[in-house]
Image (tube, helix red, strand yellow):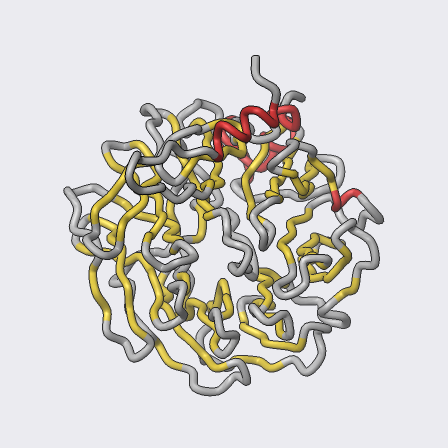
Length: 397
């Protein structure tokens, strides 16, 4: 049995051709799970396991399996550090009694007695996992991301007295600063600009932009009741989000100062969520939001075409291009561009199974990364970044 450092070395190595060296393949972090177990949402969610695979499909393995050895616990891959050396892994637990109550009432009941969701920083080289949200704990339900432009800081979204709130804190979990003081709204979709100077989030489904300390907050008045998932462009000049009505919302952009609002594309009736279970899920699935291209000059998104959900790319002036044309019943989800802009990572449900794929954008050729069987699924993929690639937030279900 190889030690963890040896396994990491094997995972990161790529054989080179005799005449031309092959560049090392980055890792893809994702979550795999059972999708069709009887018993409802929790019976399947508790099978989630954070995993990694190389971008050429080799070396797939579980990450931090020791975090999910207790009953009713699971792990979920949630992001990377800017240098790609540290992974963010969420570790969840829910009591069976609370899970049954939620199933019966078809809604979440987040209580400190029934739930615990923490975020760990995992050193990829050693496998060491550190629970930073347990330090000076403010909540039993937490998620984090690395603060863009300053890897010594983390962004934290925490459920406090039933309200989701954004914080900034040190990398070790200390010195938490509430970035939305005085607001009683439910804050979600917390995201930092690439230069680290600004933040965006939605508060009661309205988009707000603010300085990194939470001050000078600006409301983006779309006139729509549902606004969700703001993310900053690579140059920190624009914010991308969806706006409209719940389950009928479309990609929009706005300038960093809140001006220049415009709709980029229409999702053609797509509800904007992907069901990650094959059993009934009272929550309705996982948000499937648009993402920036690596150069910030276009946006990738998913939209309905006949019976399918296909991949699209749209420029900032609204010129859309369909990237996939698939057999009936195919559903694409969660597109993520590579740091060099040459490849697109995404999930695709084909033949009833959710697998991960990488597309070479130059010729739209595909490579499958996972080989899961019916009743299994791969979700929420994340490219391991180059040192210059600093993601401003995380996807979550």
